[in-house]
Image (cartoon, rainbow over all chains, first blue to last red; front, side):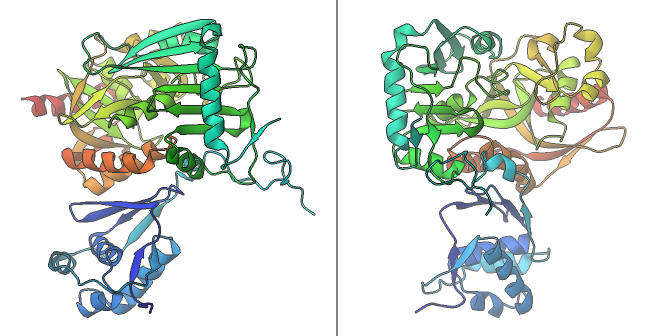
Length: 138
Length: 349
């Protein structure tokens, strides 16, 4: 049965690294990349490792409404997807990280590389002819 | 006209490589370049690309260990049985899907639609083919950094990487300058070279993490927009400068303005994120590794076909190995160079 507040990284194209408690996430398929605040990094690390949203809310380190909005953004960005798995416990070091966080819950999205990433645009074409026979509008 | 789909892509790649290898003796020109740990042999026709191979690389010395050979065929119809390039036959094309499909077959590749320009590489056998419709039917950026994707694939297979970064150095120690276009990388590198510092490149350099972070030169070309060119006094210094390139920039070579021969390596001691501050004087202050990684990794990964995740991991490791700084650029090239020179001198002592 689906756990409504458990999430997983949305696909294998979402890769991330953490630097001194601050996460950097890159979507390999689109080239969008994301920088997280210290609290955002802690929440990202927790959610992406299967800690439930409910467990995070129970810590008291983050306001519930703020957490809900943050998760909605991660879902919108295609970084997280709902998971069918049982939740994992919140690691003690992550709890400490969240308690020590000083910045608001923020994820900044950057898409300035979009034109570089998909070097060639996706084309609508006449199927039998293929690219670059562009399909005419009816 | 043959059409290639994701399904038939690996077969097409292997067919082109085999056909080019069979026609090896029919290519009019064979050019050898000695690059870091790589002896690159290119079979091609005379013309602009053959000329570019002669001056666009920084040739490595003979003391490089673990040198391997790689062969690239720059092919087009008219050379023996080389076929007309196929066209893309699927309704949709994404760079990532294209690269992933080839990687599953142990291959690397890239396709530039506008010219039906194909590049395939087999890293296991170190052989590749670049197929064009004619000898001069290549993208405008190709002569400044010839065969860049092939170098990217070959070095990535060996755990090294082309980083999108500028470099400046002093007595064998150096800094990496990371940032997107317009951040001031090229102007900073030119300022440093004109004022006594070394560099192994202002756009793409080869990095490896074997013993700390090391940067090596590959491409000798430097670029400056007309404003920067004038500000740096290069109009007077390089009176023989040619026409602007496809980006509207002047191109010249490191040796044109460097105080010494290009060093074979720089041991990198810091990662810097430059930005044009608007103030008169330059400054260097600590920056977060997150910000440095965001400046270094995404553009370096996304401007190269394939090897995206391995690049992300390598740049992550590189960022952890180095102290990171924000470099606020002043307005005077000599003062900028002096600020970096002092930083390097302190790091060396």
